[in-house]
Each structure stands twice: as structure tokens, then as C-alpha cells.
Image 1 (cartoon, helix red, strand yellow):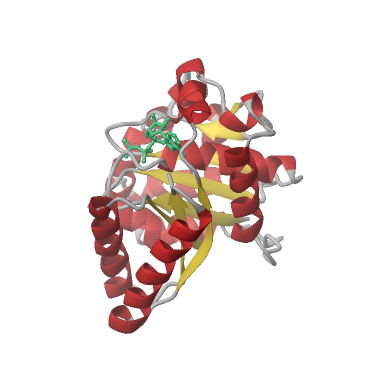
Image 2 (tube, rainbow, N blue to C red; image 1 turned 120 degrees about the horizontal axis):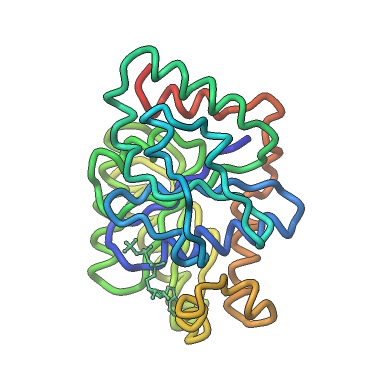
Amino acid sequence: MRTLCVTSGKGGVGKTTLSINLGIALARAGRKVLLLDGDLGLANLNVMLGIIPKHTIHDVIRGHKTLAQIVIPTPYGLDLIAGANGIAELADLGERERVQVMRDLEALNGYDFLIIDTGAGIGDNVVRFVLAADDVLIVTTPHPTSLTDAYGIIKTILAQEAKPLKLLVNCAPSPADAKRVATRLAGVTDRFMNGTLEFVGHVPVDSLIEKSILAQKPHLILNPGSTSARCIEQAATRLVNGQTPNLTSSLGRFLKRLIGH
Ligand SMILES: Nc1ncnc2c1ncn2[C@@H]1O[C@H](COP(=O)(O)OP(=O)(O)OP(=O)(O)O)[C@@H](O)[C@H]1O
């Protein structure tokens, strides 16, 4: 299993929308996907999916449930771990609880991809997820404030680890605009930070995406033939291009890195 962390510098650029729809695109391509809401403070993946979770990761940390017991199958071909506010506490768990959560995670096998929707910005928790994940997808819009913040998070990540990063330009007025944004950001990343930023694609502004949020149903389900849905599918393909998920679970490794043991 590979872990993919979806993050951004600025908030509201489409991380959650893309985490869900990229996940659905991968599920449609035959991959088994688990979506984890890592947006501390503003956990809302379940809201966008129109799901009211009975249990969240809080219950796991409190020892009331195992992770397997809180996984929610969705009608969209992927599974969800909801409301990750309590994830912050993973770092503070005692040794016994930590081992238990690790065992739980290892037991959650059978997934090809774990997609983590993080909060925006460069808070400790976001960085923790990003450094622990196999792959990191940075989402930006062409807006100057979003670009500046994307630059900021790239710099923060690369200062800690020389990790290859991926970029998706959301709300791009045209493919050419997206490419320009990506080239500029990749150039700066390469020149000043000695890192790599792979452009995996763009998604145009589409009012159908906004409508799908209001309907609490994923865009790829409601509007599968739209241009923006196709763009998301293409980005999903590029994102996992050539990646055969490990047969031996990397989930344990991810968690070890996440909680520092
Ligand atoms: N390509 C798009 N076209 C039109 N609207 C979009 C597009 N992408 C995202 N949006 C809209 O932008 C808003 C913010 O999206 P979303 O919640 O996914 O962002 P986010 O980065 O996860 O936000 P946060 O940082 O608050 O978690 C939503 O209302 C969504 O419908």
C-alpha cells in the first residue's frame, strides 16, 4: 500500500474535493482506496460525502474501537476514516496505545492506496503527515497568494527531507496557464531548494464541482463526463503512474514515521 498526502499552503484551494475525487478515480481504475481525514480542526471529508460517522479516530485513541471497526465503506467504491481531529494525539500516546494503534493499522491490509487529506498550512501535524507519506501532492490555484503559500510549504518540506513532490493546479483558467504555473514553481523548487516538483495535471474551474459539494455527492459520481472530471482522472493516472502498490504493507512504516517510533 502507498500513502498519498494531499496538502496545500493556502486553505480552500480544493484539497478535500480533490482527495475524494482522485480517490474515486483510483477506485474506478480498480485500486482499493482508503481515505483518511487528516484535516485537524476542520474535519469535513464525511460532510462532502454526505456521511454522518458513528465513530471517528477519537474512539480508537480512547481505546473504544479498533481502526478496522471505524472504517466506513462509502457508496462510491472507497472507504473512509472520518473526523481525524484526534490524530494530533497520536504523537502523545503511551507505548501500549501506540503499539495497539500500530497493530490496528497493520491489520487494515488489502488497500492499494491510503489518501490523507490534510489541513492547510505548515502546522506540525501537516508536516508530520507529509514527511510520513510515500507521496505528497501539493494543490495550488494560479492565484498569487496560493502560489506564495505553495512555495512556503514546499520550502518547509524540503528543508526537512529531500522528498520528490507532485503538483496539481486547481481552478486553472486553461491548460497552458496551469503549465506556466507548474513550470514557474518547479523552476524555483529546483533552483533554490534543490527539489523536484512533478506536474500531474490541472483542473479547471467548474460550477458543477461547487454544486456537487452542495449536493454532498462526489463530482465524479454526479458529473462523470465533464471536462473537469476527465482532468481529475488524468491526474489520478499520472499520480500513480508506474506505481505498483507494495504487496507488503507500507502502512506500518507510514505510522512509524508519523508517530516517531
Ligand atoms: N475546480 C473547481 N471549480 C470550482 N470550484 C471548486 C474547484 N475546486 C474546489 N472548488 C470549491 O472550492 C471550495 C473549497 O474546496 P475544498 O473544501 O475542497 O478546499 P480545501 O483546500 O480542502 O479547503 P480547507 O483548506 O478549508 O480544507 C469548495 O466549495 C469547492 O467546491
